[in-house]
Length: 177
Image (cartoon, rainbow, N blue to C red):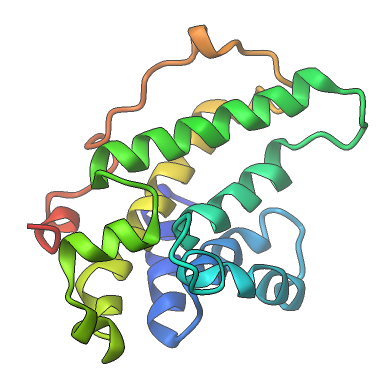
């Protein structure tokens, strides 16, 4: 599936009412050989910055789950693969943070919406929709650039720096201004 298709699918799922974390994991479920019911259930409590604790953005935690499914270790002593998954997780968080100024749900909301708007659930349209889309685009780019390194064959110093605007359309940023 093309990069934009994952973002479109995740955004559509989010707008249907799935949480940010669910929308991301569900968009990749088929590719990761994960049944959709399991994807929905396992990612459900991560929305709203992990159970509405307003901690790490649910779009990111959903994306971290995809990184685990695509690049995670299955053997406990496979440190090369484990560390590569950690590296990709940090890379995604770094890129997302550079675009949005934070990876924390509460901080992201505070910069774009009022408490009153959150209570009325307006934040979904004002910022969360874009966060889902950006996380999906960045995740797709990371997967594409690392599809041959799931066994940790590429060191972090050899990884090309992902440019925050390389996969994001101009229209994707309009809602953030």
